[in-house]
Image (cartoon, rainbow, N blue to C red; front, side, top):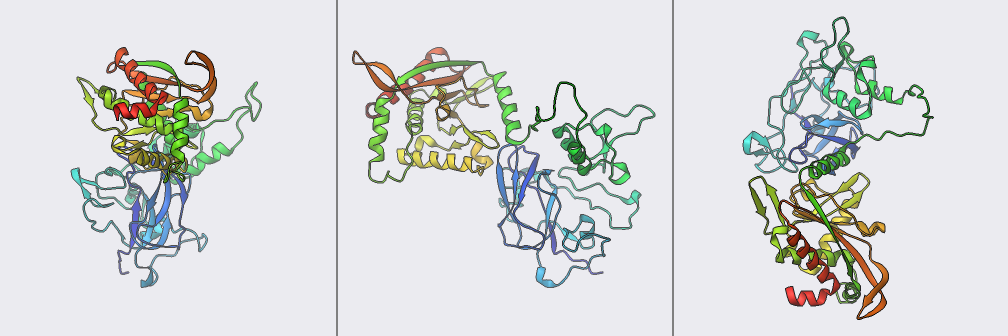
Length: 470
């Protein structure tokens, strides 16, 4: 049989430096579909964001290897594309059973030579990169290794090769997380992705009967165990509890917050400000030509206040690195955003160099992208100062936890009408409360207080502050 190299497998790329896996949220193509170069083919969620991955080749989808909801390791093949669909049918041995429309198995594709990635220019997805790695969507992917193929039909167990993995071949099945089984007890066989799935879903592999090769436990075995009704528990009627797997964005956020809380000594200060003049300034800004179609909110002036205050107190925009403090002479302004997948903090790069209108457009775009779940991982790295707007939830303020690597974070509370002493008389004014947490290793009480005072002074009279500082 003539061997061809028209079927190309696309491995899950490294979607962000250090990420090792992703969950397939949604396939945007089906087996048999024709795809164009760079057409989005699948939506994948990582620990940082949900992103769409484009096709590296044009052609016809010949196989999809992982279903929606599966967690896949970086470097694992997720889809196969026939790059010459018009060249006639691909010779392959007949498969036993199955629907004619079913996705071909990896074994059936072994009848042809599945080509690796064709040479790609340096810097492009799949192209060469420093350190023997491969350039991907963000950062660099796993080191290139020679992947071993699964055996063709009819091969013996002795000839069987381990599945394709990113860094190095792994054993076909490994003993589950427990140590070696006691004498006389059988070992639990399950591949690493299956063990991870079981851990995420709270399933004890030792209690399952495997239906895979050599009695190994499969993903379906784990899912069936979850679908089976649990044994009755005293004083816990059905429906009174729910178990939510901690994964993706929520898992990474939890790890970062714990690390920050127990690494940086936090101090939080509060300041209540009369922002009536800010509210009026926003009304005048909305009436300006060219601003009518722009969403203008108090967050815009808070962001501007922070940027000007950092210019006056640059040590606030720094990070602690062991024996030295690194002061950043640029501001990547992070805005905490609540999404369906958890809290994320995308940032506006070089926000200190933007005009007020450019800053407004950047903030609006950042928030809209975050709410749509389309924030790129690169937009959530490199932040230097963060604002969390708890006021949108009707909250006065809070004691925010520092994002890892940042020295300060500002909580902006709700703007309320409240009685306030103004020019010696009690009047109804617009009032808000600011809360700022900072790393006391870098920022002492004096610096933190002066910075917060500067932000408050700007919001109390933004036009006068712009004339004096700007």
